[in-house]
Length: 288
Image (cartoon, rainbow, N blue to C red; front, side, top):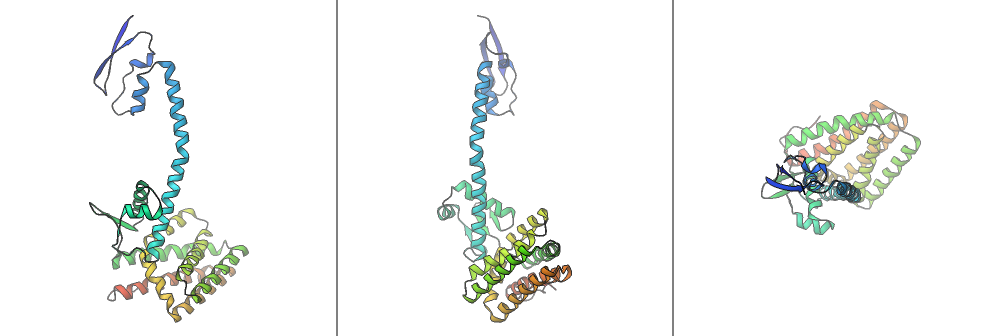
């Protein structure tokens, strides 16, 4: 039997192959190519198709797993954000991967990916050899963040005012009533979740996916500030003012009063950040 000699450059090995072996065997494989490509090159031509089909089947089967992993990562991200929002995780608190994995019933690699996503959103920060911790805001960071929120959420509310339907108004009225009931029962968690839904519905009605995405990321980054801001609604005067503001917001949106809806939205956000600044940075100027 005739024998051919060739080299695989990524393995530095000389291989002797019989003449009946497929012609693809003699092709040079570059070191940068994947291992699966090298493995295929060692087999007869008629076998290569089999391996390719197997690889495609495997890839297809893993697709659902990838989607499920992405969904689980997002769920963990949301749970940690809610934990920060309600004070379960405080600024500078270390987030231990093993503990989070047990708490949320997830693999460590899923928790690790969730923490990475939170870091990208500036909700947490990573320290070498120490892991992740809830990010603590400086006065400058807080003001920079809220200047953007005031600008963009005001814009989103103005755009939403032109898009509101009677069904949207009914949804806002329902959420406003739900907030009032939760405040009366002193159920801060239920109130905060209804409050988040109220404003999220308005942002979605702006009908601008890019704007909504940016606002969502800014809101995520301000989780620890929002936790403290919500505490002010335990004060009777503040509680009354909040409910009045939501009632006015619904009225402005219903009349499609773009100017007043945007103005009220900006004022609403300023109230939260200025409460935070007065409490933690009393020497800092407030946002006007």
